[in-house]
Image (cartoon, rainbow, N blue to C red; front, side):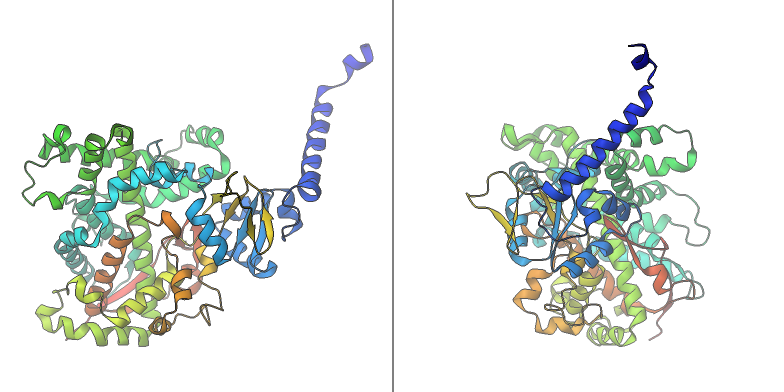
Length: 521
């Protein structure tokens, strides 16, 4: 007994941990139900590899390389299988719930549509916001989008083509203006406020920065877990506050915007009806519609106040960050490929003729019919869509009495499965010369091309704001291409513009300086 008492507990604990880790690795490699799925041995025994790629913002590249190496199906972690297979896509993205990963991007510590895992609860939330994003409703905001676009052009002319500026910052502000008018019926004048010369802080600075940092915050939380995240959040360093407080900052803006909506229409809080908007019921903003759902839906489908705030936050973050990044890459590619810009101008210059015409942006119904503009849009989204990352789903225990298989491999219930737009969009069998930017490929669009085009997701959980992005990006593209020649400055290189991924894409340099020279007619 005395001898045993003298044995240190520490070596025993270390030994126990070593045995547990080795035993787990052995089970994952030799006995796990997914042991026959192709993939590297180090991914089969531990999630460390894919976690490391997540931390280095390189995960889509790593997954793409593995899918190419292993033939369209690969085990990337003990309980995770990635695939590039259309049949599996159709099943997974119409029938399977989301994985717990999405909980890392909850807003205001509450679920929203994107973090609602099961299909039925998600459909309840979707009914609240879907009417807002119909083309017929969005066109009611077209005049303001045109106005904000011209505000952006005026701001860009201040430099007069003499020095570059970071497109990401200005375009985030532009999209913030667009999102706030459509989501809250409010003009926050983010573009007009911005001091493009001195970059001084203004009333919109915090929301623009917070929207940018929120996706990285979510990825970081998903990797380190809540306890470590909270520990780091408690550190008294001012430099980390914008990152950790990004969720809180967006919440404060959205709550203030919601309160201002109710101040304008006080009876809406109790009746769900407008009394002062003056634009008719069809002009309801997104937050109006969410509030109405909280009042008029069936009791079991009503949104709580926390649900309204979280949903509005999610749409604000997603709407600003994704479209501003995609627009930045669109402008970058117009500068890289002068022939593409020339062909685009052949379509749009006659529609925006002369000094007055350059500010008269055509109606979206006209833009939707321009073949080259639409081809440019489709190709831009294929290669530079802002969310090309893996979209996780979980194989359910019951699947219509059938087993779920991918390329002949049985996938057991509880397995996390996913595909990613980055890989699907680069399938050479569907998109010949997949790494080349070729808008003309869309002149001969096939059903397979359309089925594999998934910049907004796929299945029944596609991005709710897709139609607003369609509309905004077309409007902004034609206005900027009509008014400016775009030049790539020395500090902007292929290396600096290479995509990194914190779920959403971003340039490696975290900035995208371009030079815009006003076109003289």
